Image (cartoon, rainbow, N blue to C red; front, side):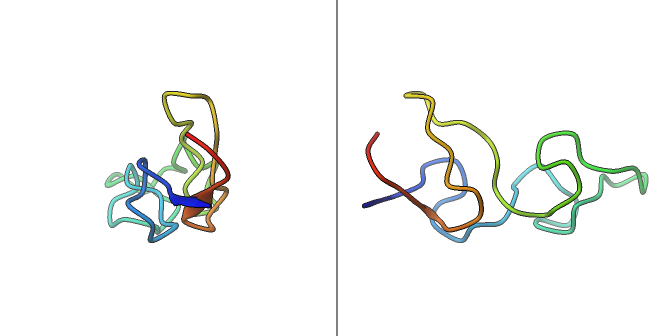
Length: 58
């Protein structure tokens, strides 16, 4: 398994503010992770780590 390039291996959604909170800076639910706080952004190859920080292949 390889480190997820979207979250850098920490499993937290980088689009939340603060990271991994599941919310945007205005308090609304993050649309990338759907409020879970886990990385859900697809890599260029279309894989998602789902918060594990690892992807099977890139």
